[in-house]
Length: 109
Length: 121
Image (cartoon, rainbow over all chains, first blue to last red; front, side, top):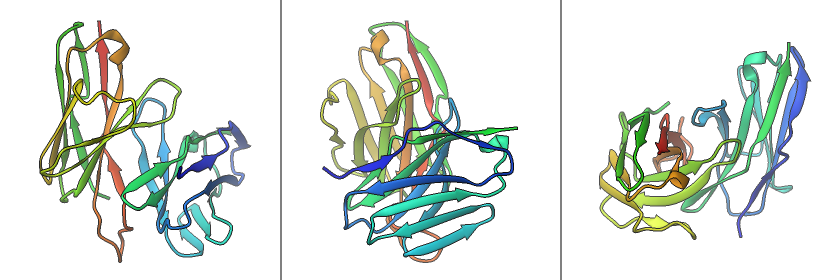
């Protein structure tokens, strides 16, 4: 059974801090990894993808991938209250994309 | 990013009636479309995967005769909830995926529609 695991949270950080969201996956054959943000009552929105080991930066977001450890993370710098949402990690597992259950993030003003 | 539309955004129907939800990829051709259901404060649940021109593949526990999926073209998939009951009330979300890689796209990137909130009374 291919799985993507995330801590459900909630993760609470003060405004301006770095929020660190983590994810592990079980399928070593996965090539692409995604982070989605989902606000309450809305559908998921793609934030970033990564497929090479190392870091990938996009504005305040940095995705990190370590294939040897089967570990993906998302760092949000200078966290804002508007970043409060559920963050879904996903891996491309062949024909199917496997989603984690999501981590709820609260950014306190 | 790619745009996926979904219609209607919300619908209220009476128990026993059928409801059709449309999902369209507006600016790309989707090799595969997915249908998810999400209950309040719960995670996404994949219902089925559909490829253009072929039968949908349903996840375990999802009744294919109740949730009819048609993927008539590379830009349109429909989900019909037949003989809806109050327990079918949920947030239904479609997504579309392209299978290209390289450049700005990652293989298997999925783009979600805005969702349809179904309430069965």
